[in-house]
Length: 440
Image (tube, rainbow, N blue to C red; front, side):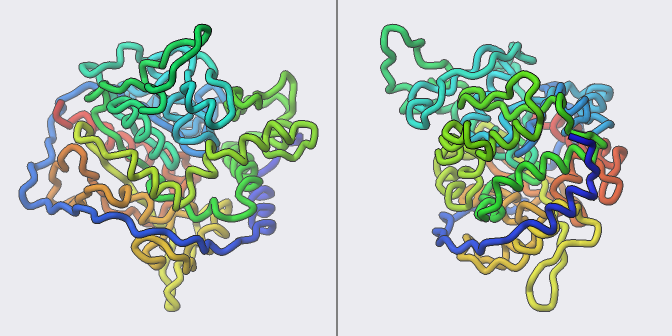
């Protein structure tokens, strides 16, 4: 496959996508407690902890050893290296780019502590895939209640750590109730819970907390392929025959084969190759993939199970790359990445029956509505005042003011139009400083 420029792929995306209206009825979120900053403590300015930061990529993301070294976090600038240089120990996780929040959370756990991924016997049986996945060496094996971590997640990477925190603290009833036969391993320690205070904080960057309207379109699956190819093109990467990119779906029997071309691999994952349609169909027709988890209705249900922990500090950074028009629609700014413009237009004119009303869902960053990335609906939050910075209590989302003029991808990878390497380095360095000032 010849090297393909970003322009070509963006034009393909822009010209080939069609949109189906989102019409499924969604129940209103439960009553949420909005706190005021009046009685809160001033945000500390001195370093109080040295807990490491774990960066968690979003949908279609990749690890540090993929994409010819072009980093999901920072591109050629490399956010992890930059933060380490300034004394903020940072690691980058690599989880399934299109997997479910459950599977990604379990993989994230094993990224950190090491060992073979155990998705849970009950979970694997329910969804029809293998119980075990790949084996990780573990980049912070000493992880515990005294050696905590800070999570920083982008997009779907904002939701997956929330699942992990839930499992760490409360375990899973179905997994604990499962009785293995004589040849099966006992229930993984992860699903037994009782790991409170292992996570110091969780910060989301354009996180998806309440669903993404994009996934309710019929063409979302092939759109995933175009996103990966387009993102690679931003870094000047031609996804040629031996380029390393992995969907990490080995537990579904969908691992990449030796010398398999990128196009053949993508087509097989997306059920375009009849000889392997059965295997990929099982994945896409299940309720154990990102396409299902990112639906608005699904995330409303998940937000009732995945609580905001009273032991964790939460913060969110939200972005809006659209402008309101006189007819009430929101349209993308001229500098928005072409990968997202059509999606942004459709989100910006939605009239679907949505929590808090469809007009609140129209402002967006190209893929995710502002209202979806601020905090999980039904969870407590406080609006951060930059001029009078206060410390939000644990278990309460510290919602930072919406940042205008950046799209969903420019907040992690410089595109020279809406972000540069120096801008992103400062942005994440400021976050690292904030996290280090949190009380132990």
